[in-house]
Amino acid sequence: MNVILISVILLAVVGGVSALILYFVAQKFHVLEDARIDVVQEILPAANCGGCGYPGCRGFAEACVKADTLEGLYCPVGGSEVMSKVGSILGREAAQTVPMVAVVRCQGDCDKRPQTNEYDGPTNCSIATSLYGGDTDCSYGCLGHGDCVVVCGFDAIKMNPETRLPEVDEDKCTGCNACVKACPKVIIELRKKGPRSRRIYVGCVSKDKGAQTKNACAVGCIGCSKCFKVCEFDAITITNNLAYIDPNKCKLCRKCPEVCPTNAIVELNCPPRKKKEEDVISND
Image 1 (cartoon, rainbow, N blue to C red):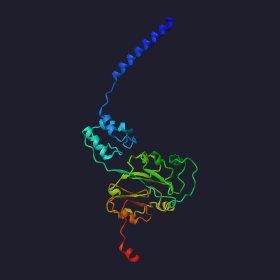
Image 2: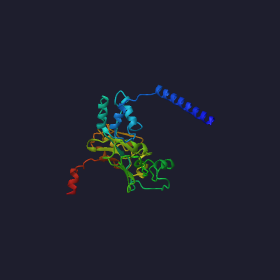
Image 3: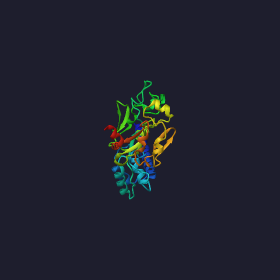
């Protein structure tokens, strides 16, 4: 009986001493957290999408509070409205940021990019990319397995079952960048939403030579430079047989789509073109 009693007393003493040690260690290394972090986190959208570049809304709130300025800090889900609130809480100015939206730079649907082989494996773009170039002669285009759809937390992107290409719902897209990171073919890009949601971009990422691209896809960019020559704003560059339109320089003049021989340039949400006078006369 004495042995049991002694054991209990020893355990109690050891437990008490350990508790005291832990208490003093916790007090010694205790870090006071800025209460404003909780306030900032409260007004964030709680999407935890990582689009801000930080691990969730908590991480972003901490970054905002600790930073001397809000420059370079932006919540794509909450947008300028939320950032203005963050700025008012912290007594700092939040710069107005242009809304961004995801665009799919591949138009090679089943009709325009014929299937030349069959893939029999996991329906996952990352896995498929590591195994082979794709089921068409274009090794750059969309694989159609929907990794981008899986990672989107806003139901803003879906696969079209007929074209096997992803389609973005710009009303739901927050520009969080998740789909961009998920695409192993790098065919999804964030671009400025543009005035009246109008955007012009090259819907192709193939770097193959013109003849090879044309044989693989009817709407691929062949690097002919016609768009480059007609652009008056230095918005188009040609690199590795591929044209690219700089959204910061593009004035939406719409001259480049007119001269593109393969219709590789996408005009999104643009009004119908006026019929040319000669076309009207020929129709009459």
